[in-house]
Image 1 (spheres, rainbow, N blue to C red):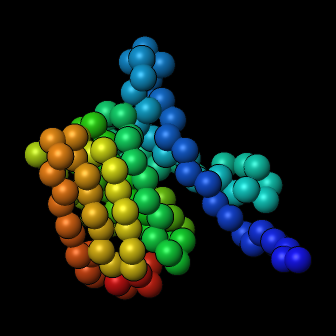
Image 2 (image 1 turned 60 degrees about the vertical axis):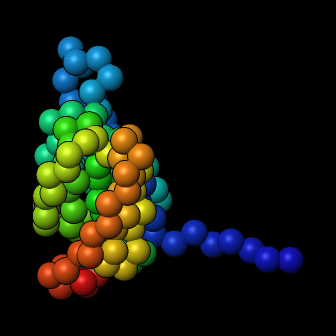
Length: 123
């Protein structure tokens, strides 16, 4: 029989910033799963966040939004490292060590190679 011992984990959830704008969840919250407390809030999108991908090392995340942008985040500081403008909202994300695959509602798929992320150890 196997066993599972959870290590230090983080959970990411989008949050609606302005309750007057129904359905616009444009911030992300980084949670400490061991304590159940929020660690920080990531702000930068102006419309609903539709997808989040976390790098395998857990230091970097990418969020995609209806505002046609991708933001690469440093999870230790909560600061954006890079921002990309797209031609359409983001539907899906997949992130490996330094490659990002982005699905758009148009059916298009975009590929990015993330470089110069040495401050987070992912580049």
